[in-house]
Length: 130
Image (cartoon, rainbow, N blue to C red; front, side, top):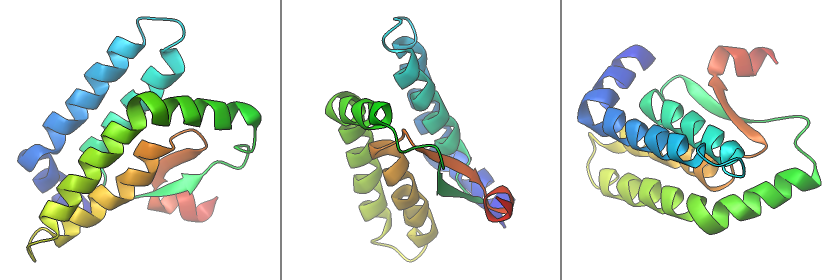
């Protein structure tokens, strides 16, 4: 089911959205300071392209001061825009019965978009075995 969901997702906008995040991440990687943010943006782009069959998993070693600082910088400059976009599109998709599964994927990605440091989007099988 996740394969079919990912194919439909890619056809109806997931590819373009993911490509935007990836291109933004590559742009951020042009500076040394932007590299960690660019990498997270690229990971978010890949997650946006193929969200079905994955879930948000907190990283065990994510309780550091650096994580908090990076998340604050991310939210201030990039994360709020990504999260608002996903939230807005999820709410629009919630208006139809057909859009409900797609809205669920948007809402799942909001937490990764707003606070990406300390969280990963992993396959459900890998997340359950860890």
